[in-house]
Length: 281
Image (cartoon, rainbow, N blue to C red; front, side, top):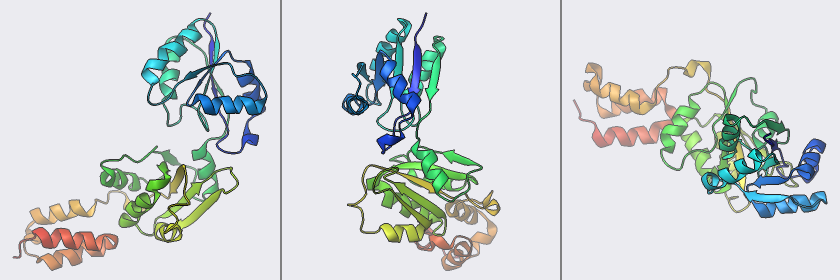
């Protein structure tokens, strides 16, 4: 008979949040597949129980570590999948192990625990009836990524490294300076903080605090209004004007005035794009 794969949620900060069922499961399993063996060993030390066999399983070794975990499961062992913090298989390679276990008929049992995205969303004050979790913004192609993300009508939740939070706020503010956001950091820890308001105000509050921010942060961003459905980015509107008869009859400054009436937040970028390549009638 095959073993059982347990997805064990661990605290995102405060160790007191570890659920009793999670404690019992961690103490019982023969193997723990974990993001960082040192962090996992410290958790077991805090529990006061001997650590089982630990297998490192993370973004950089998932392909090579996966067969070893599946072998343990095939041999009938109970295996716990844990991350450094939060629910496994959410924004980490745990989903690959879950998918592989499912394909082999191995039972997968979730053991509930904290999740940073749910904690931040629930305390943000933004609508929670519909939301989209988009993971981390990419390192490249961010302008297009944010354009598409901010066009969504539901609340969006993203993770971001502390060192890139200011950049993310600037990218949101360039498109919609009044978009409501909530920055959540140090969740469940001593210095837990929620910075809430229009993105321009949140950016101002955090200006100069780059050294204070640590680890990963959660950004909860209000969705676009229903009247924004179907709206196109100003660059697409500019391309349409260039191709139209009406656009060919406008001066560059006229085009700037027209576009900034609809996209006031992008005035500087619109001005530079139009003046740089617009042929006067």
